[in-house]
Figure (tube, rainbow, N blue to C red):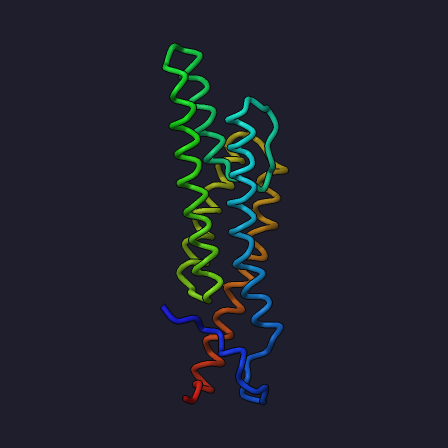
Length: 164
C-alpha cells in the first residue's frame, strides 16, 4: 500500500501539500498509538497485581481483565489471567495497526478505529465512568480531525498528482 504522502526529497513548490495538513493527519493517527500504549501499560499493571489504570486506555481490555479476575475468584484457574493479558495484547495490536495505516493516510483506518473507539467509550458510559468517556471524546476529536485532514490531503493529491 502506498502512502498518500509525497516523497520528502522532492523540492518544495506550490504543488506540494500543506505541511500543517500532513501534521494533522499524523497527529490524529498517532492517537491510536497512545491508546494502544496506555492500554498495554494498563495490562501490565493488571498482570502484576496493580489496581490503577489510565483513562485513555481501552475499556474493553479492562472488562476482559475484570471478567478474568471474577472468574478466578469463582474458582477458574489462575492461568486465566495470562489469557486475559493475551487478549489485551491482541486488542492493543489492532490499535497499533489502526495507527500504522492511519499514518499512511488511509481513511478506513481512521473510520474503523474511530467506530471501535466510540464503542469502547460507550463501555465507560455503561459503567458511569464519565471522565474516561469524556477523555475518549477528547481523543476522538483529534482522530476525526486527522481523518478530515487525510481527506483534504487526498483531494490535494487528486488535484496535483505526483509526476515521476
